[in-house]
Length: 397
Image (cartoon, rainbow, N blue to C red; front, side, top):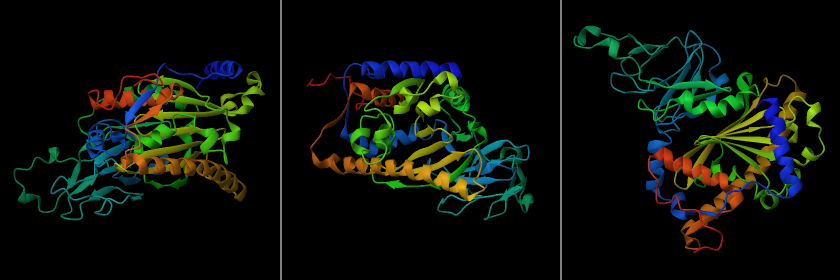
């Protein structure tokens, strides 16, 4: 975010503070509980959102040098992500073009990685592929007289590398051009210089709740005063956020109480002191920009009632001293103390869905970013699903 944009956002937020208001859209928004536990809904989401759209897979430093590689299966598609000899990130379906065995990683799809690779040989029959995906060798090639080796390259997937994050579209039939789709939000995010950051303190928490509960919980501060009263509530204003849309993506500004005291004109990046910026990269990625680092959380569905997060801090450099390690550990502890409180509430909500207590879940006018999220999902899936309700005012039938 450029400096003039930061100053405008701070001023916009201060007006709300002075008026004791917040941004909102007219009318409550409702979603039926089946949206969070119906296998058919998740199947539709997987077929579209998690297959045909660009998804964050890892930070760039995971494959920092030529020959570095990782495997990834959270999308439901086996992906081999690597850095080629020219330093370009490439992604392929992790399947041999002979009989389909995995080229890298264990058969069960557990994530793994390595470095210094020059080629990948299938463990079944040793068909071998270069980092450029081309078939480089096959034993007893004379036995395949009709084989067009030029057509036996690994199946390539679209890759975009921006803001220190690697995005892969896990389909040969993408729904969008990844660069154009991501550009509006990533251009804003790149202004924070995350391109050179490295992953630190990775975590993969499993949550007994639908993946959308995690996304929705990041899109509002209405819950801070109560759910986070023991941790971060005192740092922020009650139910106050400022929202901006970038196509299907969003940026939320969560002002801290320091915003009333600082003089933005005297600061290089005042917005990072005035509050936290939370970027929602549709459909399942959250980047929280804090004063000296960022937190990356990528949310993946396991089944309708369970999800997993691939998370890490993005720090300017790997900590080389005990002082630096303690600094990042304190930051991590504060973040995860609050997130664990969120997870408890999400698991609590999931546990009551089938009780009959609620037919719908309701969102306030100032939780309108959740509405935006569901509207973007409906559009991406290709039709307006039954669960996308017409906005209703509080108290309506």
